[in-house]
Length: 412
Image 1 (cartoon, helix red, strand yellow):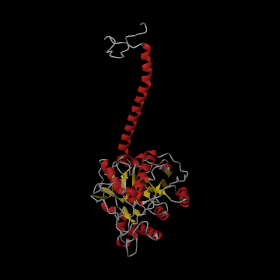
Image 2 (cartoon, one colour; image 1 turned 45 degrees about the horizontal axis):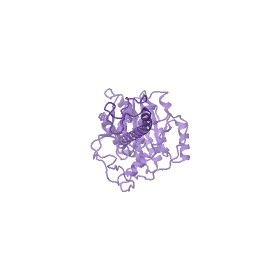
Image 3 (cartoon, rainbow, N blue to C red; image 1 turned 90 degrees about the vertical axis):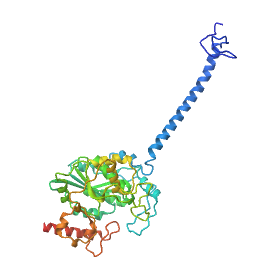
Image 4 (tube, rainbow, N blue to C red; image 1 turned 180 degrees about the vertical axis):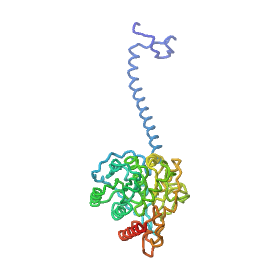
């Protein structure tokens, strides 16, 4: 009995324990049983652990993506690699949006909410800058940065701005910088022309998203990211459409007034309680899935709004918790609301105008007082000109603008 130990609690038959008269198992038999039980127990434990981890990962994934499954911008804003100014061809894409939105009121749009989502989402996965000219804010700190979103092929608009309100780099003793934001050009020939244009002017910013109307919110957020990461030391910035006439002198004077805030400031032509358009026939159609509220928060009309340059970083951060939709100016208004910030009326609200009327209907002192005004107001024809991608003879229209500005300068 020398090989029988009383430390093992296992018993056979009717045994109840080591001290209850039961038959004790030999040590060799116990060790044999333990060797067989350990692998089975370890295997079961590992299986349960793996299953628990899979369930946990699934729960975290679904809760994180459920809010952004339509337009996950927040995954990509922080992934901007450091790009040089060398031209890099855009990566190949297997999908390009075919839906085009015509600006006429009678046109039909074929996209539904799924198409709107797909158009925006498909270009975010390889998102990076192709041209960023980040050195322009390193050589000199600008007081004001004018950011102009424009189509890649619209060279006429860029040249017109360069020859008129965007030509000055120093206004009222303050450094002013004018830059153009573009998406993908859609062709190698156009891309090479853009590269040559940028070598000449050093004022193009380009990222590899589709340059479409439905991507205007993305285009605006790329502008905000560039300002936050490439030019954070600027005092103010303005997003201004390419079909606008901007009086930069008046803008700089306005921003230098004592009461103008230096932080958390956004102003422009303010819009209050604007209803969300649900008609699919409208250019401004927004699906219920993208924005469920019936009205937009207060926002500044997208033709041109001015903001302190601390806001771009805040916009990029808060956008991580806001589902994007395709009305870019209202989206910025929603960002302001989520930040708990109120938009500010401009010191002189009539300076922000959006009228399509003939230039010769306005006295010259009105022109001198404007800050931002729709380009269509400079059309001399009897019928108002509808500025946008369908405008004919843009060069003639902008030639008239230059003549109008020359008249104003001569009367000053």
